[in-house]
Length: 158
Image (cartoon, rainbow, N blue to C red):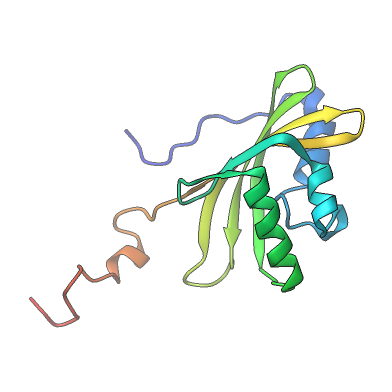
């Protein structure tokens, strides 16, 4: 099996408008134009929203809302880049948006993750139903991998 050989993603042409609408909203909770207050985040998430973080931990809507309130009160800034968006309709008015997020792009310690968000179109606007982030591991043999030392060893040890 070839590592990280992506499936052939092609958003159907009839979903181009949905893809455009949703990709502007990603990464979720990082777009000030869509809100920065707890009330804004409550409005953009479904009542039964939950997420799986890059760590694999599951988070309820209440926990996510508390963390967002803390983050935005501290005015934390972060650099990120989104790419490789793909949209698929799961059911009438329900869409899966997938993409790649690079945090701190251009740095040696940039963090790359694959993201999936399930969105629902409602009378009040777009609602986030579910979100997941999965870290992308470095390929064996990459320059970052070659510079890593085995645990408990330092350069020069044989």
